[in-house]
Image (tube, rainbow, N blue to C red; front, top):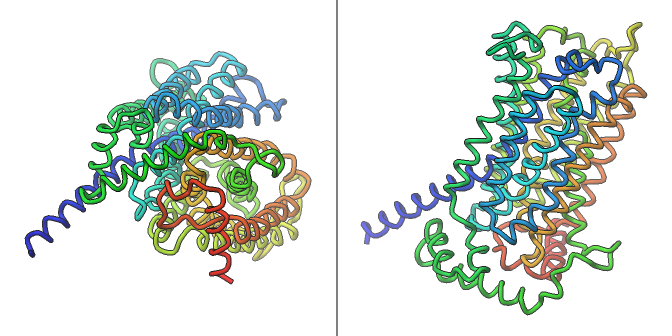
Length: 494
């Protein structure tokens, strides 16, 4: 009996390792996004010099943010394409687009050419951002699905850090981002070309991944679906899991007319709006402002951000914090649930952003037009900024990706996830583009606005977001079930 238990535990550990490995490989799409978003920031000043954009700040900002438009388009169509041809082929398409974009951006000869390649790369990132959480949700056992879904955000944060390190090494080797490095090409061009490495790695790993068992079962490939389930679940659970998937698929066919996203709430189903608003609030709190414009914040409190080593230290501190706190979500998401983490995050972000708004209301504008925080207000603002990163990284950053992979009924998951992810990228673009103008008007107002959105997100989660902890995807195939689950969660917490 003892030997049998030992064998069972060994088998369970082996299966757990297998599903973790599959989830990590799928989540590498997030690494591509994190890498790309930080690479452009290391190259932007050199790009402005090479393409004479110094007097065109709006065009320079659009060059940075243009990839996000491609992300929105890629995300919107990814789910629909994946439902037709499978999850793995779509991952390969995403990797291919990012690879082509990396090479094209590195050899861009004009700003419009660079923007075009950036948009193409964005298409690949948008595709990966949708397929990763969907694939992980469909292949992971429900007991650990939340933790594995959080790997998407962890991959993003690691991508940001890797890009910062890569940019610094390349710039240091050349003596400047606009100085020639290998084969006479400037260092900033190599920053983009290096993006080809994670694109190739992602493509190779995706090519070796098994297809989603839900997709296989939907295409009548039952034996293949069973084989995939058996590779990640104990033998005693395989038949039950496959039957649950097939029952759900039969119900989907019988209710095919309800597979539309259309509903009575402003033209869409309520659950679709929940997904869209989750994505939107994740960006409206201004997290990317902290990453994209962190040097502005640090210069306001007296740091010399013109020094490359100082700028690197500044960025690394923030990115390391973001990486570490993501493990908090991975550890707690399947223990305490999604809703408690989101509510805690909203409250924490509202307080920390409020502190930043208060600090910048005391700023003194120098002759050069740069706001400076006097006395203790500088350290207070820095503490507020890093607390904000902690609360976001441990909650809203990873948990939104988890919920987007879980919350939608099976019959509309692909389409709904695409729309929600597209909303996220578009909001990211809007926040990135508007921050320079808002900050020139008033940083106190800007951070106050983000504080307002963090506060509203708390009430949105409390009243509208259901708890999906411990539930199979097949049990979320009814809007009534989602509503009932949300009401029970609210009652339990009140």
